[in-house]
Length: 196
Image (cartoon, rainbow, N blue to C red; front, side):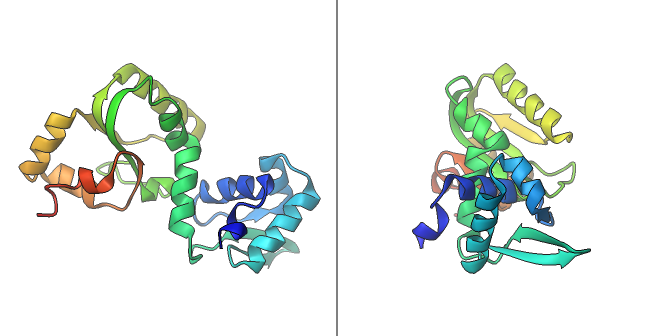
């Protein structure tokens, strides 16, 4: 099965494009070519393979064939997680983690990763640890400028996080039970004390 996933640089780029776009996005071949900066024949070949393996689907609209990633694909969640950790905000946080201080846990909400708008009371990103706040704010500001949308984030040190978990703080519990993609740290360790 893994040979279906990572056989070429072109497929990796297409996966990154599909999985970092909002879930209802459809792409025309020429748009994909522009976005991934690859030859049209290579893109067409990879799209055909992705359809064959059940990763992508296409539909015709106004004489144009449009493609999207199939959310029902067996490894969808795993691929979504890989792409979230290597591109956009998740990729920037992981790449710059040394500058950000000592991060114990960091995660993105699955809604945010899928490009679904969140409510103002939802958290897109939670970072726990001894954080260099100006660095974190700079990374978030860059991503907000790219996406042209506000990112709802929260940060705290580990002592405050553990205290709020023990006290069953409604805010923390709501943030922790939402579907998420862990960027840094172990989810089981983070949820210790929540599910008890």
